[in-house]
Image 1 (spheres, rainbow, N blue to C red):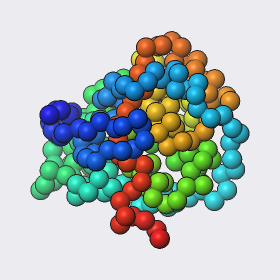
Image 2 (image 1 turned 135 degrees about the vertical axis):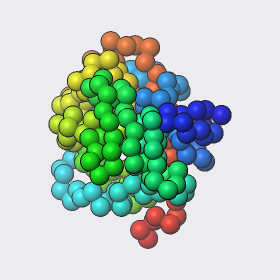
Image 3 (image 1 turned 90 degrees about the vertical axis):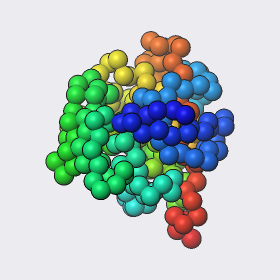
Image 4 (image 1 turned 90 degrees about the horizontal axis):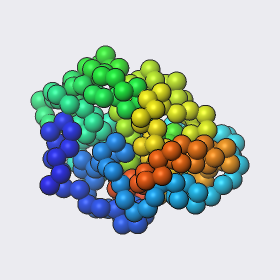
Length: 238
């Protein structure tokens, strides 16, 4: 039994060889929670396929399904799952699903403390590998099921300060890193893990930036876990 932040307990099953072969993802650890395993982050970054960025043509958020779909079938949307995982001092609506308040301490991107109040939120749930970036590096070739899985995979999601997150946009490691330098190795390792798991490529500049960060922390492990790389059948477009 693993006790997650926010007092939520869940049984975490281990992902096998980063292929998405995991059954129960409720409470799955994200990049800040799981020290990882299954390989060195720097070696994994060096092994990523390097190609040029494809055009952004055709990208739309809807290509990755409805926002925060309940792909793990726990009757809670993905955003609330991540808030429950990452926040402390949680208060809920009339259930144990809808988070109405809490605190992010520390915010991984700034290192500061950020309060959360539903409807007046200063917290975003960020896609560590931005969906637009994924679209330009392989995801436009996928079926809907795999794109929905990526958009809702806990290994690719983290609660963060909204203002800092919006400065990131759809940047990759070559164009944006968290201001909190202490989190950069964890952040980059998470990007490498997501791109490895889903078979996304990187640009030459992006890979160089990943290696530059990870050489400062050569013992950084590759995060593992998260959802299967295919959403359940009910989310399939066909």
